[in-house]
Image: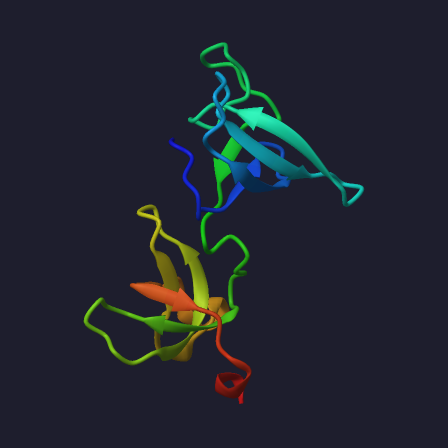
Length: 135
């Protein structure tokens, strides 16, 4: 994995991370702020691959893990979905998780986990509905 600005990350132990700088002239070239349980942040440096340890294969609790854009979605959350890349219209659906390819999944035809009997459909794009769309 290569750390990139604009992507979301968390530590291996689940704490939110902010990327502060990526051009430090040192072996660990990325500066991050890690949210602590107390609500404050601590500063750390990591290597460009997101690891804190210089020992290959060694894992630490502060190693970076990429966060999927769908990590904060729960199964059955109402979403607006485009089912294909050619789709221009957003459709009302319920979130069904993320497929092995990383694409979001939705339940078909307004169904939920309970009513879909295991059927799910891959979506091209998913977003949260606006307040107006929820009415």
